[in-house]
Length: 373
Image (cartoon, rainbow, N blue to C red):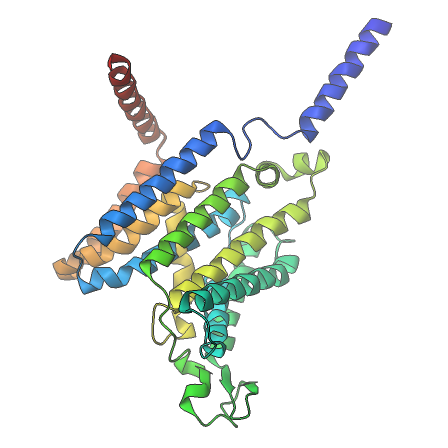
């Protein structure tokens, strides 16, 4: 009896240790590390190839927006794919980041510092403000689930758009900041008008470049990948898979849901700042419900929970409408058909098996060639 009791106690101790200890293959596991290095290398190679191509002015103008949409898709995938909550107001965090980042960059525009440093500070401010709004919205919203959460986040995005569409922010002659919802009263100089209601942001410093955008994409990918494979990321996925089971082993549901949601909103704020500094003027109506749906489409077509898939889908679905523009009225028809085909390929069980078999064959060919050498 004593021996059986000892064995039982040992099994119980091992079970507790398994719950507390992080699973094998954490952030710096060889498989995860190799995958990250390959993805980053592909992004860097793509940057050098694109930089040396002679692109049209239209395609050149799309380089920064493509990077912005990649960041937005990866950040939303943390909420939709990793946390398992449907958010339809992600463009609201992007809008907040865009407006706060531009206002800050306009305030320090005359400061004696390099433009790159000004832009980095603006991005940091937009990131912090995005995180703060994520906390403010997340506290009540994350108590909801399913359709209710989607409706509330949708309402948040529309409220933010409406408020900023009627906001006036400027700098008076004595250096004070004026902010109201009924037009300018003491700001007479056009250079001191930062946000002009429906006209939106004006005289935006064009700090955004393709190089900075690619660096931000790489940084956001590293953050997302490491978060997913970290202890916190596994806790978030445990909540997604089975909330009751996760709570029963001591996982703080509110804490980890808030971490994922705030991290997602912070990255959306940074993306909004990058997006705004690519244009001379920008209106709040650009960040409407349709933009949130567009970002959600990137996530769904790329694979929910698949960060690499979000990158590929954001690139393809951003460039595809412009590449099809030459065929006129048939452009959206072909675009819609391709969306359906991609969805079927991505989500069909049979197609997944075919892709896995092709991948195994290609891997086998490379292994044989390496062995022969």
